[in-house]
Length: 454
Image 1 (cartoon, helix red, strand yellow):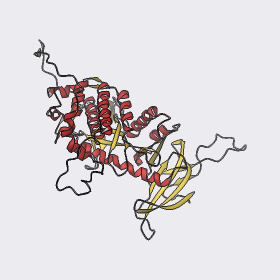
Image 2 (cartoon, rainbow, N blue to C red):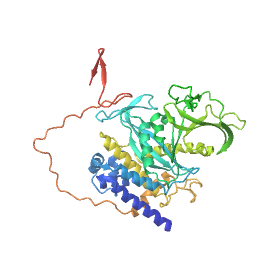
Image 3 (tube, helix red, strand yellow):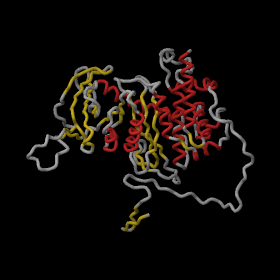
Image 4 (cartoon, rainbow, N blue to C red):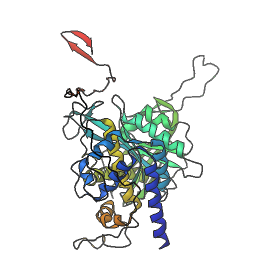
């Protein structure tokens, strides 16, 4: 009973602190993210006005998304303090994952700051937006991820640049009492902007996957008196397609598979020479000792060389939990259901969905699972932790015991109507989507062999 009271107090404190981090339209945004877990289907933002927890008119949702403001620094602190109570360490490290998800808006011609994003489903670039998420993986064997950062990738920018800023924010909140942290990322983040963000960080390390065609460098030779030129930054090259003999190699077992791990020490990238780390190659083996897959798993690790290599390979595989996190937000909390023409409205919607997920995360130890007759016995095991879908299914019955943190709506009388001399609004300005390499506000068009600046 004491644990339940502590969890309830933690959830109540979280809701009050989040409400305090909203600068404008705090009550509307608070009731908005409280209503999202209560909807069985989210076809648009206006559907959030259907539950009884939303006590205002449906039109206030659009006003809150358009005019609402969030103090990102205060909210970031709230989320960072809340994730410590739910997360576990893996190999002695706190595991974070960074990735982007796309929002395709090819028909929103009046929406500014769109850029062309490659779509796997369509095979071509489509106008839209990208949002970068940084979240902590809570535990192995679970799909729970605690999102800490939600940032839109600006037009003309790159996800790795936005992720670098998120890492810097994480480093600013980390104290000496916190455990050492690992940020995992896929091969698209092995860029200069992202890797240089870890230079000089003592308690945050990067574990990034590398493509098979990458090239790294060993340390340069020590300068001698005969060297009259500037000291070299790079030593011999290490091609991943044809690497030299590793400094260490051994075989171990990860899960149910045998793995051969090779290690190359003290390597760096040509465009990030200040970040020296370790190259890891993991080859999964069949029972006869042959490789199970065509290509091995290449990882770059910037942390101490004393780290357990088996744990590092396991930690990278935990990065895939953020993919399940994206799928849950899109299928159950309506991440892509919002269709607006203002980027700030879309930013507030993404934050509302992330905070609705936080309600499920903090309440997963408080709800009573509603098992269905056809659920397997393993799913109905009371000792098994609940999944996000199970918590969402039981959230409606549990939410009735939550107290209100917003003020009751007040009527302001009859609207004044249109002002005298009102004229019909002009059509909104069209904004073509930026392509890669273009800068905001400057476009060039070639017409009849001449370059015209627009």
